[in-house]
Length: 588
Picture: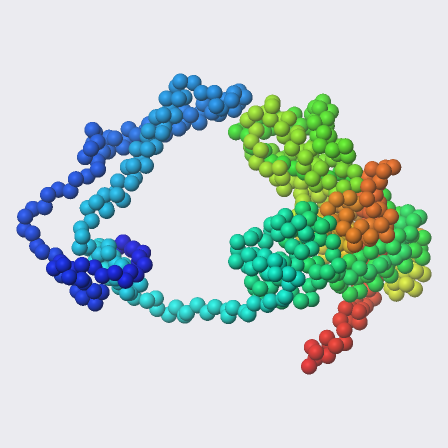
C-alpha cells in the first residue's frame, strides 16, 4: 500500500467533465470506458542502444572499477608524498569515466520517479487538494481509503506555557536586543562580541532566558563579578554565578610550615572535621609530605593496516636511542614542557602512546597535548601509513577512574604521613589507637576490596580534594583521579602511638591558567602562598599545592575515622549539617 502526504488544502474548485465546477461534496464522474486496446506507454529505457540490464551491468562495473583505481592511485600518492593535484592522462580518463557512469546511474534511479508523473492518468486519486479527511492512504488500485484513528492512544498532554517574566532593562536598545535573542535572529553566544561589554551581555542573556522559559532566576546573583575575566577561557554564555561558601581549616603543620587551607563546600561538618584533624596533627608535631613524581600525560591512539606495523612504531618509541630526538620535537611546544617518557600499549593494529611530561606550574593538559601533536607530525614522515584516530585515546586517562593512573601516576604523586601520639588520640580524637587501626583495616582496606574499589581505599579523600579544588580554581572534574588514595594506619612505639599515611598517585593541580586567575580563586592561592608561577623554581608552586592537598586529606581521614570509631558521625551531622527547623518540618 502506498501512502501519500496530504497537500495543503486549496480554496479553488476542480473542473468536472462537463466544464462546470466540481465542489468537494460532489462525486467525480466515472471515466468513460474505451474498448479499444490501449497503445503501449513509451519508456525512457527504449532510447538505450542495448537492453537495460546490459547497460546497467556495464555502467555499474565501470563505476566501481574506476573508483577503485582512483582510490588506489591516491593512496600511492599519499605514501610517496606526491601532490594529489598532479594527475596523469589515465587518471584524467578515469575521472571522466567516473563522472559519466555516475550521471548515468543517477538518471537510472530517477527513471521510475519521472515516468510515474508522465504516465499518471488525469482521473486518478493523486489530486487530493479537496480532501478534508487527513487520515488516508492510497491502496493498490490507486483509490483513496480512510485510515481509522489509532485505538487506545491517549491525547498528548502539554505543559502550559508559563507567562514570560519581564524585567525592565536599562535602555530601549537593550530591549530590542533581548527581543532579537528571544526571536532567534541574534545568537545568544555572540552577545559579547556584538556588544563589546561582557557584563551587559550577561544581563541581556539572563533576561532573554527568563522571558523564553518563563522561569525566574531571582536568587542567582549577577552583580559583583568580573565577566571579562572568564571570556574565552572559563565559561561561555554566563547568566550569573553560584555562591559557594569558603571555610578555613588549620593551621596545617606540614614539613615544618603552617598553612591555612581554604575549602569551598556546602557540606556541613567537612571543614570542622578537617580542622580537628589539623589540630591533632599539629599537637603531635605535624606531618611530612614527599613528592614522588610530577608528570602530566596524554595518550593518542593511532591505527595501522597490520598489527606488525603498529608494533614497529611501538618498538621505535620505546627504544632509548630515539628518546633524545623525540624529546627535542616534543619540547618545542613550551619552554616548560619536558618529555619524561613514553609507554605504549597495543590492541590489535591500534597503538596507544602514553606521553608523560613535566609542565611547570600549570596543570598542563594543553601543554602536553601540543607536544604530542608535534611528535605525531614528526612520526608521520617515517610512518606515513599511520592513521591518527584521536589525540586522546583514553589511555591518559583524564577525568575517569583508571588503573593506569592508580599504578603509573598522573600529575603529582604524593605520600604524606604523621605520627599521632596516644594522648592526642584520646584527648582530641576521642578514640583509641587500636580502634582506629582495626577500623581502617576493615573499612578502608577490606571493605573497599569487597566493593571492588579502584583507587578508593580511603574514607572520604574526594571530599577534601573537591573542596580545595573549587576554592583554588582547579578543574573539579579531575577530582576523579586526583582522589585516588590509600589510607594506612599502624600502631607504633610499642602500640602506643598511631602512624597514619595517605598515598595519592595522581593529584592534578596547577597555580596558573584556567580558573586559578579568577579573583576569588587567586585570593585562596595567595593565602596558601602558591599564587601564580614560581620565577625562582618553575613548578614549585604547583608541587607545593599538591602536598598541601595530601596533608589536608590526611587530616580529614584522621578525623572522620575517629568519628566513625567513636560512633559520633551521625550525631555530628545531625548537629552541624541539619538545622532544627528542617528536623521539625520532617517530623510534622
